[in-house]
Length: 342
Image 1 (cartoon, rainbow, N blue to C red):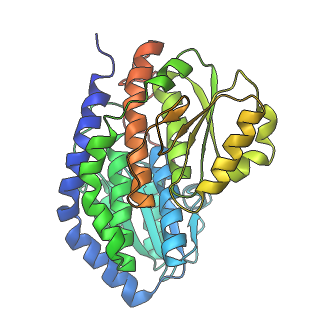
Image 2 (cartoon, helix red, strand yellow; image 1 turned 90 degrees about the vertical axis):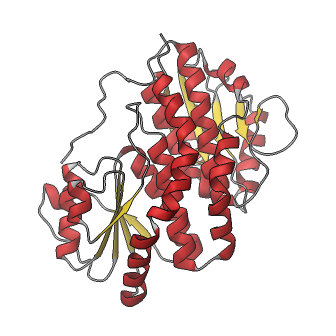
C-alpha cells in the first residue's frame, strides 16, 4: 500500500491549480481592490486556523513589508465565546480557510462585517458559509484534496496572497513573479531533498527556522511534520530562537532552516553558522552549490514567490519521509478534513 498517494497527487496538481487561479481571482480581486482604494484601511486583521494561519503569517509579511500596513491576527473567541464586537469600521478583515466551514471563522467574519469592516475570505469552497458571510469571496480554485493534510490549498493560499499584494501595490515585478510561479512550482517539486530524509527518519524532535517570507514556511513545515510523520517539531524565527529556545540545542535535535532570499538572509545565515559551531545538525534550504546539509532550491527569482517554491519542495520531502517513518500521510491519526471549532 502506498500511504501518501493522495498527498503526492495533490503535490503534482498544485502548479496547475495556481495557474488556473489567476483568472478566477481576477474579478473578485478587482472588487476588493476597489473597496480598499475607496475606504483606505489602516489595519488588516486576519482570521485563520492551522495551515491557513500560516498563510496569514505570510500575509502579514507581505502587507507590512510591501504596503506598510500593520497586520494583526484576530482571536476568534472574542466573537464566539465572549460576544465582543471589535472596532473594525473601514478596516480590512481577511479570513483564510480551506473548507470555509469552521464556526469560529464564520462568526468572526460576520462580526467584522456587522462592525463595518471590508470582509474578504480566501477559501477553497466559494459556496461555503464563510464565503457567504463575507463581503467578497476569493476562491482558491485548488479543487478537492485527496489527503487530509492540506498541501495544495496552502500553496494556492500563498499564491492568492501574492496576487492580491501585487495588485494592491501595483508592483510589476511581483506580478511577473506571480506569472512565473506555476512553472517554478513544478520544478520545485522535483528537487532532491533526500539527504533530509536520511537525517530525519529516526528523529524524535525537530526545530524549524525561518525569517521574513520563510517564517510562514517554517511554521507550516512544523505542523506538517507533526501531522504526517508523527514527528514533534516546533517553529521559530531566526531572531526568536536566540531568545531562550537556543538552550534546547543538542546534537540529538536536528534543525531544518528555510533561508529567505532577501535582506533577512544574513541573520538566518549567521544563526546557522553559530548553531553549527555549537555542534547542531542543521539542514538549510538555500541556493548554492550542492553540498552536505544544503537542500537545493530554485535559482532566486522574487523572494516572496521563492518562499512558496520552498514549501513545494518541502511537501515532496514529506511524502518520502512519511514512507520511511511508516506513517499514513494521507490519513493522519485523530484528524479529519474539516475541523469545526468555536
